[in-house]
Image 1: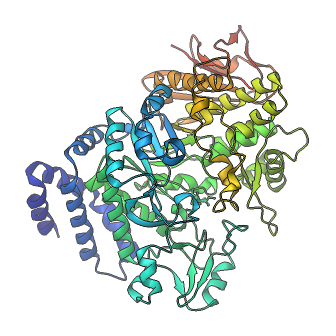
Image 2 (image 1 turned 180 degrees about the vertical axis):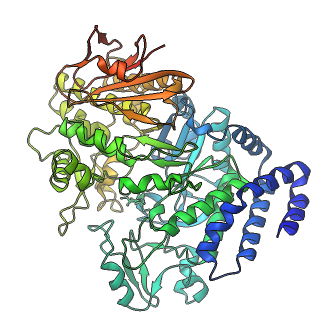
Image 3 (image 1 turned 90 degrees about the vertical axis):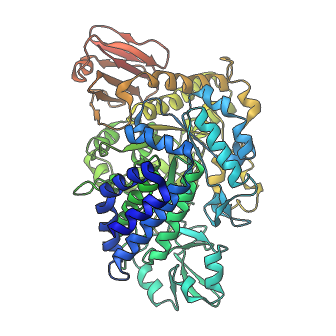
Length: 638
Ligand code: OTU
């Protein structure tokens, strides 16, 4: 292979770029070949496949705009560019934030004001018309949703963002296409070549056999995992009936999706959020998630995208059992480069669990026993996203702190849906499964923190407490060693959308309650400290300001949990070889807590110094640190 590829590279890329490409290839060849061989060794000639994919990468490298090559260079010098403490993310739908991609470009000042350096725009490739799961049912991967703009607009926006020092992340729906996608349409028309790009069965025999061990993702709005399609048979549809799972056992599917990655990279996308990666490979007798082959696929994607666009990072959206999460960052028995970033779903769940229980022991236990992220990778940490909250609390972790897993999950559902007596939360149950008793939670952060109920009761004291809850969990997310993400509207304490079900295409999916349109009128108050918006905005911006200067808060590295004598105070330490250690304390209770200052010594802090906190000052005497109700404090030393 070497010779053909070498001359191809020299011919298409010119001397300098070819040399860089071939150096990368030499480094990546093992990581390209090994997973592909394991995946496709039995169905195709591997040399030929590798050859084809590498020449696709050469084409993509040749088409890469000069400006992006400069980014590649910088990021090859600093491959963990995304770990910088100035990385602060913002997540929104282009249309809900600003109408269109062009509209987003007009609000960059707002993002800069907030300290944002990473913008995640929710699905924006052309979806099917009508119900499309918030854009997660893509009809055409080469086009942008015409309601928000064009590919050219996307490229312009990426450029503008880069000029402001903001990286752009977009969604890539890798697990399934819309049934209106050209492949599905051709399969429907009877073409076996296209049928083989999906998982289609002539009758219920195999679907029944698979379903014996398959959990349902949307038991309520899309029961079962297969859909009967007239003239075709039973199609694998993990999510909705209009989302057809792709057949990754077919290398053509892999190659085409890789092509989409190259194309998006060359438009200036910095981070690709790979949707639903755990589902990429199916195996009889399992839950068809987290299969070894799903990891091999991501490893191959990683190695090949890195050839053509070394500045592009991959982010795994894998909302799975906490023990399986870190594997998407490449932490297997041995390290295999996989995604650079992955959602820290477990931290998110633990924050909400702790708010409801006011007891940090479950979080301490679960978060301290997990494997750290590999050094060259990082978590993205978040409080809320566009999805529901599923209670990823394992029975073992619950039992270790004397809880029953099932009862605790039920308690959390009761608490956040507001049915638990005295709950301040105003969320709703999502996808209640009557058979298993499971359910998840929808609702905006502000509503789940108690802001909605405090406003309704016009209770100023409760409102302060609720705002502190919001600020404190964001404080954790900003300091736990990942890229923090601000979910659009949280910076203004935006409540849910009360009219979310007016749109009939959304009416059976209450996740739309926490996907409101941006309230620009409310944003006008962001610098007025007397308003709710002003208080929330100052809180989030304050976290961004404080984080930026703290080397210990770079993403990556380890976060060490330091149990204290108080069951409602979470303490953890971050360190960086070139800075003083960092200590965060968070009070998950309605009471003022005096923490034994011994924790400062245990965190290795000398001459402790306040860097940031709820009230702007921390009362520290010789042996106590005082935390106000639902307050947090950040300390560092010399
Ligand atoms: C993702 O979520 C998206 O975030 C959802 O908005 C989509 O509906 C879905 O994919 C289908 O495209 O099950 O409840 O482990 O948890 O992929 C949300 C990953 C989901 C899954 C996740 C999925």
